[in-house]
Image (cartoon, rainbow over the protein chains, first blue to last red):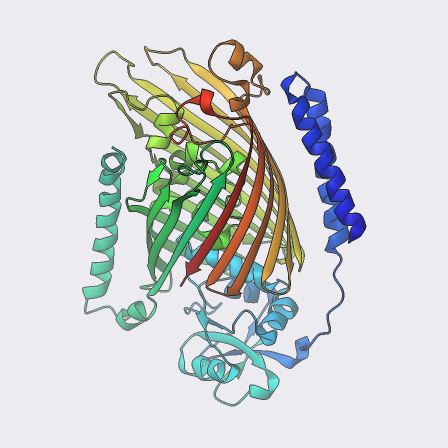
Length: 179
Length: 405
């Protein structure tokens, strides 16, 4: 981290020394400073952006998409699944209202489901929900705390969709095939 | 003054909403009665900031040595899905922000959204009522701390001087969402409605204290947003043409018109642990017709680049460079100063920001940030009425606690 902080310090020095000269009509210098600063930021972004590989607790095969037994759509494509969980699409392909259930953001199953099945990160999902809820363009998904509650909620709510680890599956819900 | 201007529209929108809700709620023949009530969702947020500046006032008397607590946001919303295609939603907002906003509650939005088409490939819907303007990435939820990367949004684009003007419209908005073959998502929205007019716009135009008042007029807004690969890359173009009318009881300053035409280009890259965001805006401002002053037409330019990094599960830090000029033909403000209108540095602002957010619980967030600012281009005129008392280079520290449910 040492070289990164010294880089930052250097950028800061450049930046503040530029300010003191700002009295004159030194447009070119100002533009150059801004350019340098942004380039520095972008460089830092790429350096710090590389993340260490994290061991996967859940692989895609371990997680199942489940629905209320009354749902007639037995399969979904990936885009529709993503639209449903992003709360952008409000109905099943068969036209019935969808009720979306999710686990807490910090649940490993939720994180794996978002990444493996939806190809989005949990923080993106949360932001998408917040933006809908607080701009009047949509509703938030229903929250359940545990996978047992997920099965109970999905099996008792018409139009429900959710996800669980395979080991929690029982006959009260149906599994949805995702292509 | 502000209340009287917006109350007619808020009460009209409120009546429509109340009528719609009661009609849906009391009709015994509706088979979806129980579903409608089951679908009721209530959400809200509260945030309180503490602000200290070494020079200049930001949201209250922040530079007096004791800091300012005058930045509070409180919101409460309800939404209902009476049928599978209908969504009814409304939010009340109370915002205190120095002298710009006194906390009196307003109807932030109130809409009936009818999603008339929803297939595997596309969605099409219409919104009636007061809708939030989709301007850039953040305008629609600009008052909700949990949707902001920092306590203050990049002020070059989301500053308060044109806040009420850019905020929302009372009218009709159409939206369309297409899922493309490459997995991308194309979201388009187009709205026509009457803009809001607040004291902030009057003050920015130098009309505060004069006898007339600014009224919203017919305005249009549109946004096209493309999301690639589940939002890994997001690109957007937003444009609006907001019109307001000034009605003067006498010949001074005379009737006039005010036009605000922002164009915003937005881009974001999202990785698991970091995001890089940039937005560029051209802001064209025109006044015409006033007896008391010449017509003004100028184009301002704003942009920022922002890097956010998530760490330790519930922490995030941010660095941002944000810059604004009010007039592209006078970026350093020299002509402005030479004309005797005020200090040159009031015509631009360069803001370097470092911030950190901690979310120990999904509904609780603590944030802190530091701004190093050159220029007073987006400083509140109402909190700093005397330009000669302002300083060119200033520093600002903010802390904020935010809650939501």
